[in-house]
Every structure is written in C-alpha cells, then in structure tokens.
Image (cartoon, rainbow, N blue to C red):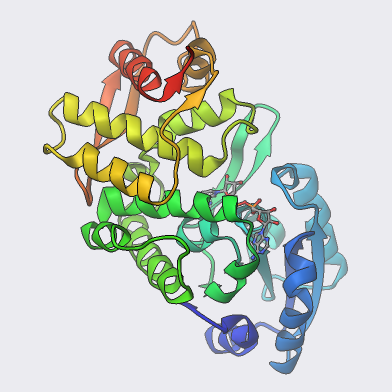
Length: 349
Ligand SMILES: NC(=O)c1ccc[n+]([C@@H]2O[C@H](COP(=O)([O-])OP(=O)(O)OC[C@H]3O[C@@H](n4cnc5c(N)ncnc54)[C@H](O)[C@@H]3O)[C@@H](O)[C@H]2O)c1
C-alpha cells in the first residue's frame, strides 16, 4: 500500500490484514526512530497493539549476524510468540535485517514493512529478499521471506537526505528500463524536485512491477535477474571505491549507462535506447563518469579474480526502454564486456 499520511494508520491496516496479531516489535534505526518512532507507537497503541521496539545504529554495519541475534533477543525478552509480528520502520538496512530475523525467529514469524527511504519504497521493500552481511561478502547470509504487509508513506521522504533520494531514483529508472515503458515515459517528464504525488505514483508503479516479476520468479533464477540491470558493474564500482567514492545510486547509474551504450554497440538494443537512458539519468542528476578506480579491482569485484576463467556470467542489457534482456556469457566475453564498460564510465586520465 502506497500513499500519504499512512504512518498514522498503520495500526488499523495491520489489524485488518493480520487480526490474530496481538504484539508487535518495531525495529528501526538511530536516524529514523527519533523522527517517527513516537508517532508509530501511538498509532499502534490506538489500534490496540502492545508494542516494544529495538533501535539499531543507522548504516550498513547494522546488517550483521550479531545485530540479528541482539534484536531477536529483544523480541524474545519482550515476550512475543510466533503468532505475533515484527515491524521494520526504516530504509533497506532495517528492512533486510528485520525480514531476516522474522524468517528465522521461532522458525518464522510475520513482519510488516514500513519503508522510509525512497530506495526501500521503490525496490527493497518488496520481493522478500532478506539478509545480513558476512565477513565474506555483502548480503551473503539471507533468506526469502515475504512481508505480510508493506505500507509506504511518501510523506516521510521529506526528511530523507538528498543523496539517498538519488539512490531511489536510480532504482526506479532501472525498474522502468527493464520492465515498464510507461514508467520510463513518465520519468522522462518528471523533474527535480519531485512532488509528493509523483513520489506516490513512482513508488506504487515500481512496487507493482517488481511484485509482478517476483511472483513469476521469487527465487531469482530467471526474470527477476533483470532487476540487476546496472548492478553488475555498479556493485563492482561501488565496492572498488570502498563504498565511499560512489553512492549506490550513482554506481548503478554508471552501470546502466555503460551497458546501455554497449547494448547499442552490440546491436542488442534498438537505436536510440542508450540516448534515452542517458538522457533520463542526466535529467535526474545522476553522474556519467567517475575518476580514479582501478580496472583490476573492478574486475575482481565483478567476479573475475585471477582464478575465475571458467563459468557463466549473467548480464542484463536493454532491448528498448521498458524491455530488458538477460544474457549468459562465458568468462572471457564477460571480462571483455566489463573492461569495455569500465572504459566508458571511469576516467583515469
Ligand atoms: N532486499 C532487497 O531486495 C534489497 C534491494 C536493494 C537494496 N537492498 C539493501 O538496502 C540497503 C540500502 O537501503 P537504503 O538506501 O534504504 O539504506 P539505509 O537503510 O541505510 O537508509 C539510508 C539512510 O537514510 C536514513 N533514512 C531512511 N529513511 C529516512 C527518512 N525518512 N528520513 C531521514 N533519514 C532516513 C537511514 O537512517 C540511513 O542513514 C542495502 O543494505 C542493500 O543491500 C535490499
């Protein structure tokens, strides 16, 4: 459910959807809780729920096994049972962490998503991928566990820092590019600053499109991989810059640009596709170049360490705006493509 003013109606909405739940434990982070925690608790109390909460430090480091165990301990000590529920009030970090705990605690309990970042409202809030980071990689420990209800209130985006808005926009552009020509066309007419009504429309469309894709391929074995458009190179650039040089949205935007240009050069895309994608990213202020990353490091983060000369790699290109295509490449060709893509968006001169 997407709209405005929904945060003050969450209690009644949860009650309607899950009438058996008596207790709720809210998980939030140190930025979001001071802004919206009291309002949410008041609304849950009005609807007759008994509620408790855990607040984790804002940021990626809270997506850890240790934090999952700490928060699960809070839930158990608060006396919730398997038939009660968790609530994730926050961005993708809180959503992934809460979903992960909900999938494991008491062998699985319900959770409700209240995504507060634009990225979570257009992307991570639905789909049921949960997870935490491990010493051997990001999101390496995770489960598939669908939220019982997702309530995205666009009003809370007012307090979101501008760079985080761009992260969400990049994901919205990605969804439009691979699966939604109508959204692509409407984003071509949107300009910054985005109005509340536009936020609602973009989030509602993205969540609907993603939900449709996930319905056909929940476990990410086929069509869902289209949602990785821009991410193969994007993740590698983001990681090569130590997650400091580029934000997630900026890195994904560079990945989308590079693969749009390559797709046209390789005649996978109809002429004009790269121009349309680049134009949309320009319109929303997403970067076209980054300076100072090493090719070797990017290749390694793209899965091409010195040992990996075998195997198949999946990459996403765009046939035309609104239609992605997933290709399976041998390591040698994949390496050549990543090298070309790197040269298109990284400036080392
Ligand atoms: N599960 C999935 O399908 C999926 C998909 C994409 C990304 N992710 C994950 O999502 C995470 C990134 O999500 P994110 O960008 O939302 O990060 P985040 O949760 O760290 O939120 C970004 C920042 O914005 C703050 N914030 C959030 N909402 C706010 C609001 N309304 N007002 C003020 N501040 C607010 C947060 O405290 C944080 O500092 C990553 O861990 C990524 O792996 C998951």
